[in-house]
Length: 335
Ligand code: LMR
Image (tube, rainbow, N blue to C red; front, side, top):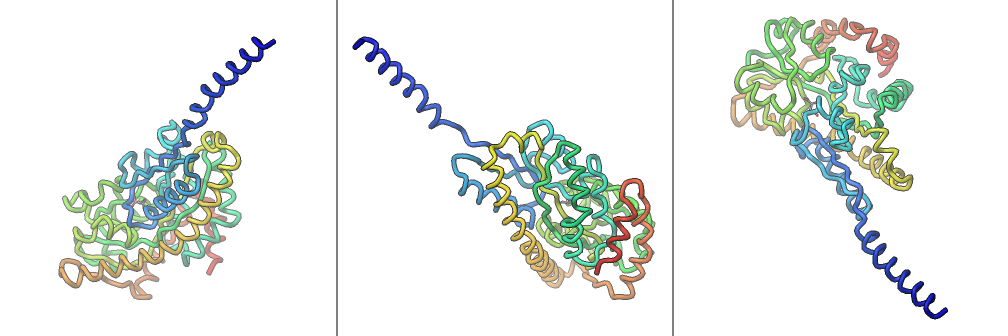
């Protein structure tokens, strides 16, 4: 009997010795978050903030590592990298989903959204739900919408104040067909280039101009290689923070809940940051223009804006088989 007890004790001790290090060594779940912009932009800030919060609040359980500036993947490759399991999160601009969720090109329509609030209404409403279902069908999971803001045109050739000013110029655009149509409608050419290549393309004259938000322009110094910038607010840039259904469903329920809560709080803060950062960066671009005398900045007057808007309106309904006309009509009703 004594011998059995001893053997049992030894067995238990061995078990403990074998199990304890295994439990102690359990590795945190890794989330590699890849994006293309600089840290000092709305998306860059939010990705870092999400990582900081998760790494603090779920220490030892989840570890988020952010790879900014297209260090790992350009936005066009991010969805493939996610699906292949090389990264776990990304936040491409809606324009970059052209190959997977082309309906997101709704957000590229020039002069469609009357305000940033209107974009939130769309995202949080019935259209947003339809889009969310499209993600699920593709095996992707939408975690949040992050905001950047409205874009402005710039050029090295001439001031851009009327549709005719665009004629014959080449502009770098994101990979959306709607943006290509927008440029064509203005008599210009849109060249789809990765974000990481824009500065060089502008500097070397591969393209004459570009369109982007103040935070993206300032953080990548595009304004330093352009001569004319029009504060046009003509189009929108927003992001879908995305993972795969496969990765998400592999997470324990309580981790999912806590990640969702952090993401929700970061998203609310991100929307405020986006506005502040873009305002600050536009002011910094103006300061640069004044000091350097190398850049002219123009505001679109109401009449000029109305003419541009009129010239670009046909683009809204140019791809009805991709972006439903009823979506566009719904946004026309918004203030
Ligand atoms: C661009 O390519 O201009 C933007 O989509 C970059 C970004 O992620 O804001």
